[in-house]
Length: 157
Image (cartoon, rainbow, N blue to C red; front, side):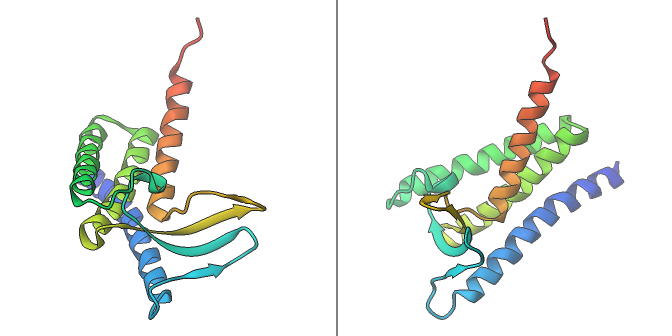
């Protein structure tokens, strides 16, 4: 049991650590102007954005009350996912663990900076995807795999 919990904590910590390190590097690269717009390739840029909304900048508000409500909801959902994780196993559990690690990375930002640090900017010709971060990658990956797993559980009638 202890070994299993240690393995789970290592997964969560690894995702959290990768997110923190990437954001630390971006914040240091953005000094002293506190902005960054750096082209890595023709389709990948590092563009520092402070996101006070939820995923992909949705529901960004200037008023603290809305920010606090959104942050409280995110923390509550993360706690529910932690509880669900105890009842899951295998790949499903792994997905929940990487979602938790990513969520904790973004919650850390919300509590320390009052915004989430987003910086990965992908574009192709005139199309720009939403700017995101490493935590968002793990959260999205976990959710997509969980959806696929759910579809695979459906039995044909």
